[in-house]
Amino acid sequence: MNFSAINLSLSALAGLLLGLFYFGGLWLTVRKIPGSGNPGILMLGSFVVRLLVTLCGMYLVMDGKWERLVVCLAGFLLMRIVLTRLLGPARSESRLSA
Image (cartoon, rainbow, N blue to C red):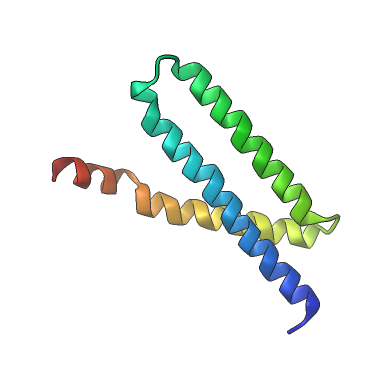
């Protein structure tokens, strides 16, 4: 295996993990809104933390090479698709009715 192939694979894995952090954090935040005393601050704080961690993570993964950023972003978006299918509205409604 080529060294750049390993780097791109690690970039994809980092994108998946960053996507899990970002979209998993969003899902948790949305679930906590009904019980929150101040939902605006909860949403804003969650957004800022998730965005900063994700952007800093992608910047570190990129290391000056656009190819790594593209692969990391692809992993990030792939995790969005996966989590949307796993935690989407159809799943939530079936859990509520059970």
